[in-house]
Length: 328
Image 1 (cartoon, rainbow, N blue to C red):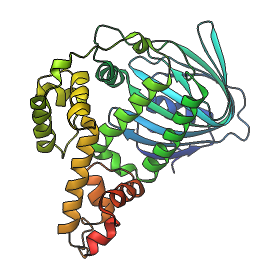
Image 2: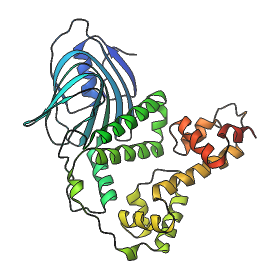
Image 3: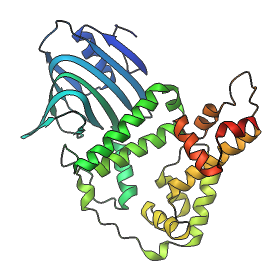
Image 4: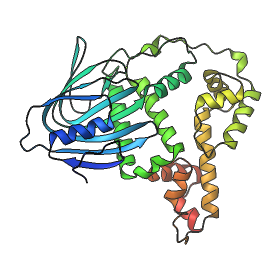
């Protein structure tokens, strides 16, 4: 760990007992962070663990004592979730007390004031453009400008779902930060988090009522999409990109796949990648001295960031562990 603040965002762990150095680290990681004051410097402790995720990031923070802060996200969406300590967050006239286990959203283009005390928190930072693209893919409507209209989850159940997803994902990514250097994995995790944010927090997306022309859901559309997916399974593909290659909108492609394949395009792409990983495990040399043919390495190559989750999905698909395939 380092106690000297980085000059630019980095992946890894950082710790300091100097509030000014902690604020420099936070400003390096989150350009829109504006510290106002730390209410105490005695016995101050700060720890940060960061992993880049494409154009965004995920992190875990510990900040002892209390501090007043302003965050003015310009082109990013932030979601903070304390696991210990209490936050008070205000946007304009709206003020929320955020207790452990409850996520709070810092919406783009609005100044958010946050007072926290002796806090541990997970933080998700996404580019607003990525969230807007996923919103279009989910609704099929581009004319409704995306704007988040609340800081809290729409229901306690959605908050718990976000809590479970983010704790699991951040834990896996921070244990294996090198996997997010794979654009395929970074893109998939970004889309997963963006979709979860849209499902969890209130926004103008709820005003969009998609209408998919039923005539669009033809087998030819699905065949074009399958061809594109199988030709590009080794790289990141967005739903919009697959839809464009198929000559249809994202929502129409979803309908076409559900009608003719009983699955979604992204689930189909994941199935193709699982098959490619299976083939590589079959052809791999378990004694490879360079370590290129381990189960974890092959899983990451095909976009599976969490080895344990990959092993579970593999077992469900092929009825034996991936290690057995590698050794056979």
